[in-house]
Image (cartoon, rainbow, N blue to C red; front, side, top):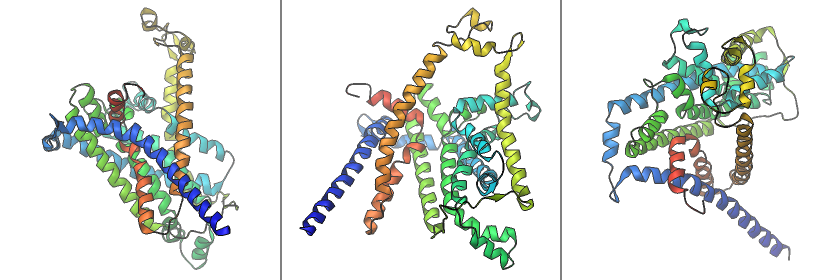
Length: 424
């Protein structure tokens, strides 16, 4: 009887896992593979037959090579700077204890949740003629784009690495220090290898966000500066060249896949049986030895505040001086003389309707993402004994990371083409 019950429970478990895999897989197939595949097919199919000549033509173009080079350069430099600046911040905000630590943690997260276009506008307000940093002459340059990407992704490194650092057992580093190791050597040989999985995860995410940045690059880079993401948009919307856009989307997908593979390989090589203290607060008061981290983090936080402060100052500037007129105009709609004279907002809908639309979209996206995400977590958190099953779970996990690295323009146009008829 017990054996029959165990067998019955085993089949229930297998059936539940199969259902948990089927629902996310169907969601991915309908809302990602189908739209993106349709766009790529329009680029590589000519009269119903596969024609890969467009790849050689597009990839041999000097414009395409320049765009790919700029994309890789901004991604590598942006990721490197975000990690170098984020590690001291992760240490100070998660390993040290000081008044206002929670407020600073919340503050560094604000840029990440801002719309990318807002980040671009905030930086432009600093760099354009008449801005506080106009003397740098950085408007429309590579440096401006990279600075905005670091601004946007700083919180990813701080929170991802800091969450692990906060619960890392400090006794190994303390033992190394007691045996005569310098603070730098103890960090490089003990702490840094232990944090390597978190650093690799954070770096891979930042690289993805940098490589697929759109609004920030479009606002700050201008027409003279292009990346794969913006070039897909240009080729699709301005030149109506779906073939070139499909080639670029394929290149972008390959780059993203390669970054995920390298990140996973690095993480697996570095992962060890870490001693994590989940119930013990390992944070300590700020010490003299922590001053370099304090200095770097303070400069980073000031760098985060500068664009936000400039944006706020611009919102208070009116034709007659300084005031709240711009905020009052948010309750109005219409474009015309009143808007041009600074007496109206020029909005097509009221700010309340826009906020309601945003809330409705956010709620729907949240519950769908939670449902799909929980099912995926139930699967990838399992540890099967068979190597083939482990590889299958790894591939399943990686498949759901791919949408992060595919052009939003490609997905959007794919939706218009494939999901424009009932029932979808």
